[in-house]
Length: 161
Ligand code: COA
Figure 1 (tube, rainbow, N blue to C red):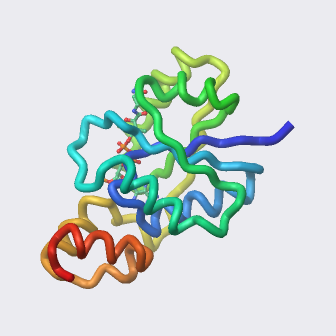
Figure 2: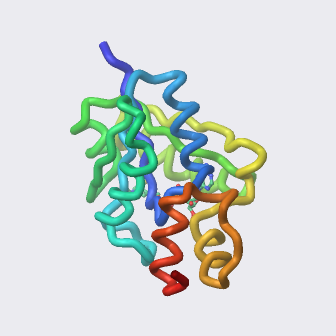
Figure 3: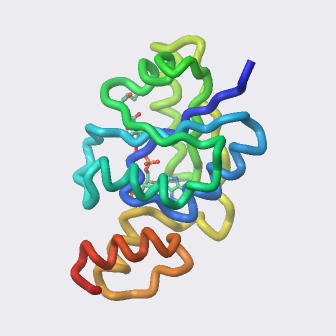
């Protein structure tokens, strides 16, 4: 049986920090479903379709990754994809409390689903999509944070190119 993991998030936009988690997940699982939350409570810069398209572009060579969207409860989505594992990246102690709460809630309502945490690699420990957007909007260099396709899309959004 194939080992499938779901990596959910808002991905507004995807960064090298997310890609690092995806690549490392592929060393443990056969397939990774990157699941973009449609109705995240956050207001987003990119539409869901734009976020999906960017992830697909960046990961087009990785045949073991599929990109999808979901609405509603994450655990319902995970079950619908016949997966049992949710991957989350942990960056700092500040992430822990929130992630712990969500993982506990998910495990009490979706009992056969495990959440697996990966420590974000040191060089991405301070990264977030919001900080990349802020730096880009102020015309800063974001080469080390996001792939070229994402940089181009961000600069276009901010009317910089
Ligand atoms: N490297 C760098 N940055 C990272 C990272 C990594 N490895 N992992 C996460 N981040 C950043 C993201 O860029 C994001 O930055 P931002 O806040 O500036 O946008 C931040 O960390 C957290 O984002 P993300 O991992 O995408 O989580 P989220 O909080 O946006 O999304 C959902 C969480 C969508 C998975 C969650 O809300 C959910 O499951 N919703 C569905 C509804 C549901 O089931 N609710 C019940 C839960 S109990």
